[in-house]
Image (cartoon, rainbow, N blue to C red; front, side, top):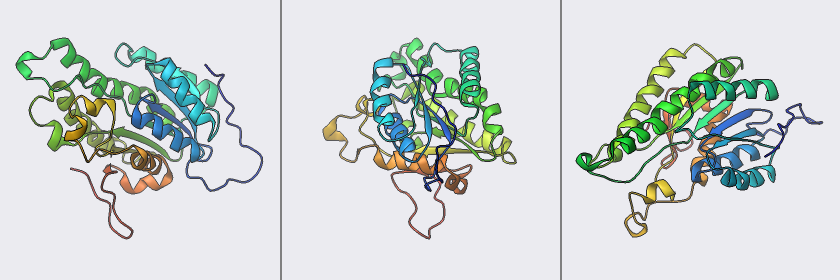
Length: 265
């Protein structure tokens, strides 16, 4: 575990990094996309709060983040068992120790595997909905007062492709993904006149443990590493993310130079 780092500005002028002096909380920081996004955010100048359920995995991500940017913070938390009071305590700790929160990136999700609905374990179905939708909503709700205090703040939810997870056997995870996109739209409308930008990030097909529960390697040649999605996360968390306010950024098919913002369906 680390002590809470100082966020007082370092000597010298800003070096132009897009997240310089920003504080970013990443939920699911121990996963493939979350860990890559944490490193990318640190390289972009952010002080990163690493939220995840496996301390040993967070320790490894901590070392990677510390090597490229400001000292991060570890905050182990299991989203499955955490309640609204736990998220309120987290937000309070961030406020007390860091004094600000400029961005929240939520990469957490639970997918138990492809299962016929009639055979799905009810508890597993409920767990997928909770970790993928309800827990991110609770976390966002707890952090929103902090985000509102900034002149520019970002609330980013990672989402999956509806045309894929709306097919057979995706169960609670698939249902939660549709709910997550609905939440993005609702919060965008609600916060449209506030400094908090709400957006989604579709990372495209990634080589992650979650995706491996649905596809074998030979069935999934399009899957790639998380680097492009991590770079897209930095864009959405930075001031440049204003262009994607209320939109879903498709990291697997980003707009080219001069092209308008493309909304992922």
